[in-house]
Length: 386
Image (cartoon, rainbow, N blue to C red):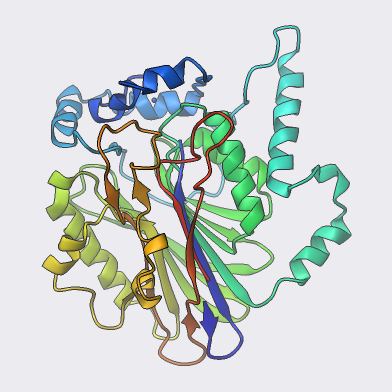
């Protein structure tokens, strides 16, 4: 995305990885998925177990969600309260188990080394500090934003998928990363590897959203979380006011209420998002990215986008190749028996009233390639715009 002066904005979106899940998530193990499961390793971390247990506390609520969300791949989570920059309660993902003759510490070292390589593109021990500084200084005045529902609730082949996720993060080196469906174990792993980012997480347990800011490019000024008062899934709106090369930005992310049957609550949340976008300081460019779960007819029901707020995909001429971020005709992570193509993941932009304006140049989907484990990184594609 280019500014009227010297700034450019680049953005992206995607999604990642409980024992007993609600019925609408357990459907992924049916049919041909069973054949896949015989060829993959399933690893449950304490974090994912915790996320699952949080859905077992209220059986009646779980059954209700299962009944109303038969075609959904989303679940409920506790109410998010405030940003946290560290997670110390849950150990990181350890990776695929090595032969039993290896000690746990050796396994952890091998796993950490492998994840570091995935993130940096080559052995991090071969990259000097001078080389890293040269890479940083050589970057132009482009703002790169990546938004992705990383589906960490799904523990199938989680180690392979997190490694693939880190590879994508390292490849694009986004200035701002917006994540949905993050869980504590995955968060800890990302924090241990991506030390060049500041993490603003939406919760300490369950599953949640997060905003990641590249330390050498983006300065955090302040942050807060807006609650959705009537959510039944613990959804909210994290907001970060930042400075990018001297340009004030307001960054927002959210995971709006899931399931077609929860349309009214989702629209209530969308109205609240739009309200906060419009009320942001006039000298700030506002960027919202997240898993909105929106259908086009829902936006039309509200009379379309408010004046001053633009849908980035529409601004770029509605390119067909980057339209559907949730496409079960190609992505079979969930083994849904029929094809569903929806633009769940969306990016909204409100330009600053004065000074340089960020303007998108292009958008593309990434994460379209399957990993060696025969899974995609997430059930959502990542949406990137420049």
